[in-house]
Image (cartoon, rainbow, N blue to C red; front, side, top):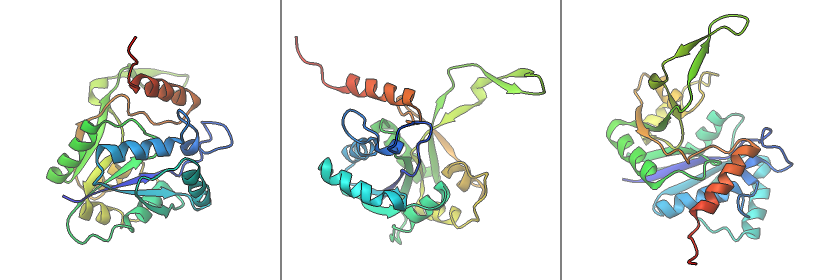
Length: 232
């Protein structure tokens, strides 16, 4: 089974703050997206990585690769006007005519587990489409009217969605031939628009998306906790 993983890293990171886009901000002395790519390559060195960056960040990326001696093998391509178009550009880099499996992952999710990645690829090969999800920990309410009126929603009927979202290559190609609409919030929603069903895989809670300074603080703690403990 040939495996591809498109890593999209096109956000401007306005909620993260700072001059540097969030995917290039440092996580324990290394740009976040490099931490993500190194983890993915470590989990499965045979998986072909495709990195999608905005055109204006390509030169910055090349400079950072030299600065940090980054050597993970990958295909680099530029993104589009939206995430949808960036994934289209990533798919265009795959010339495989045989059936394969392709995932799409956020460049600012550096903590996906090996178990989740393996299960997403395995379930996608069997069912066509698989995404990682986690349970909600907090209560959930629905706004039903003006003046802040709300009603409780059974949280056991809902899940939080993560990446990588993984599909058979032929299915994802067909899905991304559709015309873009604002309802396409992720890859699963694009595939679902074809009438296809999406299988859920249990995600890992550490697989957070780094969007705010608070997220980055949590990520730094996770990185510290994952380091081997020195003997006393």
